[in-house]
Amino acid sequence: MGKSKYWVNVINGWWFILSALLLLQPALENGYPILHPDSGSYILFGFLDHQIPVSRPITYCWLVRHISLYYSLWLVVIFQSLVMTAFLNMVIYRVVGPKMSFFLTFILTAILSLFTGLPLYASYLMPDMWVNISFIGFSFLLMSRKLPFYWFILIAAIAFYATIVHFSNIPIITGTL
Image (cartoon, rainbow, N blue to C red):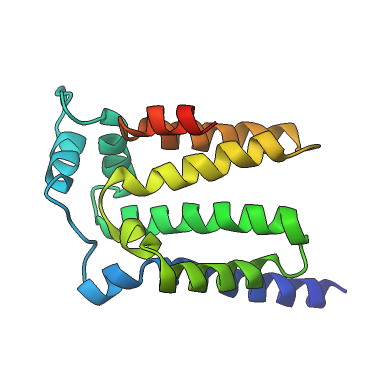
């Protein structure tokens, strides 16, 4: 019984990693996380001490600083991809249950990768992708019943953070909800 559960977890882990890699495909093709003219501001203000940007939210700057570990900006886009994959899996898990959720998350990610710009947003060093995470998180919280308290707090914290990483996310999420 223990070995069977181990292999199920290994296979689910592979589906999860493959889903995250699908979201990183543009950055992998580029050979580096995709930069936007605004990316420099987030990187600069993330690594400057004692200076808060006027036109950029400090929250994404801090994310770049701390997730990169002062080592590589790849860690930021990998983190973004993993969080997005986790939130997609969370929704699929709630809809179909635990048996096929990771495989179906891979299928959904493959479809989204082919027909939407989600992989491009996940590969950018920009906070634009976080509006999706915020929307999924708050929608999930509003529609879920019998969610354990610790999961509620974790999802709410991530969704709230995803809302405040970009100034335009606040009115978008508020108006949508």
